[in-house]
Image 1: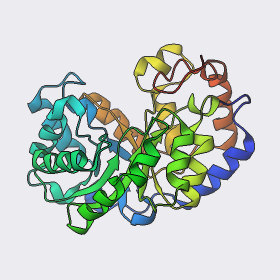
Image 2: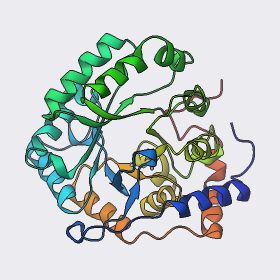
Image 3: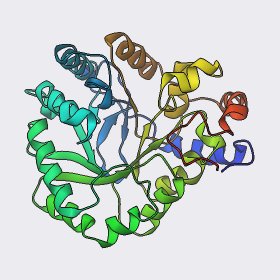
Image 4: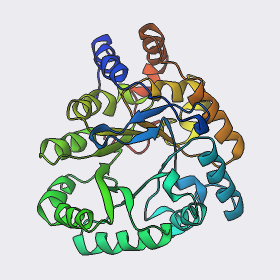
Length: 316
């Protein structure tokens, strides 16, 4: 828990790191979409990523509409696609697989699985490969690290070994982990010593005020050259931030992109939202120090309660 406002010292440290990871030049056919390097992988990924949960029943789109949205995203230069084995009972992966027919080489594909048993995790990986209609997943992540013994189970009960074997077999290219409950578990996952390629965490204007991934995890990941994937830029649901009136959607996305993240994943369930976010990414300029501190000052009172980030551990 944070008992003080987001510090200027933290901002300056992260801003320096962000400056080191500024977008690289986009290819002409990417229509000026900014790109950044995903940590030690050296892979170039779009600053705006497409979240997989909203392309199936979690959102409001029919299959045809979802596939059209993914094709539009690819055409506009989004090359980072997020998914998970468990999203909508596999429908998100199935739809994405259909959308990627003929386009697989244009997308850096990530999926994840929350199994904590090696054989089950690999069975899910095989299923993800079939659903996504691909021979290899670019980034496979241990999903939803939230239990106190999750790091121990992953490190010591065969899960890492299973992932490394799958990598040797060419089924995955890079290995990462995700979570949004306790930043201390992210830190433990890193400090136990495996050279993670990527990690995914909530990054939004409420986070610095309560159980902060921005303050506790992001500097550690940057120091270790682990690619950071931002998620929950609206704190999990539009209502969490937008209905409070303390920040706009554009401010939330710009805040996340101003930090040393490789990509900011956004759940988009309409072409209108896709176009709005693409416009925000293309016109992106980093927040100045005073702008960021003013934004976080506005969000401090609500953010410190923790209740607007329902996915985090909460006070008794």
